[in-house]
Length: 131
Length: 132
Image (tube, rainbow over all chains, first blue to last red; front, side, top):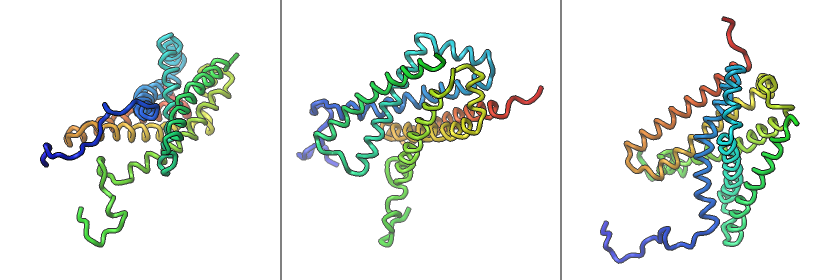
């Protein structure tokens, strides 16, 4: 193929004005990667520590309740909700609906708003367990 | 794969796409996603219904059929969906065929290993450790 041919090229990332739909799109991959790699590793570790008994579970709980552990867990909770809301949006888009500019923009923003609210509510409720 | 004039619409798409799996991988990702919405809500509400997060409470919950069976389904479905998603990302960014197969292989092995650890741990919780 002659790359010097005078033909229109597909516009690339640099010429587009950044919008919420682009943010949500890349966040879907980033959050999916995070909950798969970090989230499933922690799930396996959590189950293994429960199977291992008191000492193993105490070790898990100590790390999970440390400041760094809490930052990771809250971050993964947000990643989970963002991926879930964005995933639901994708299931709708898969049917061919929701591509109108304003509608698309509105639901992209709503996944961001929804994930923040859901993360706050989740941890408010989790902190209440046992109290 | 030969594509004669008599190929059906399904026959024409099978084996296509950047992963060479036609539409099957795409569909599987969507089926598992819907299952994970339900299983994730089950996990979240189950945790919130527990009186506390002591080890005895958690083991009693996961040791029961109502804890163990959905958790086993969650583990298998989540690893499957996560692996599907990571593979799609790899397909988009790793263009060399040999590297692509190698990264797919490593990811698949890691997912099987991780799911095995989780399922073995769950089995230990349900059935207990063998008497020494």
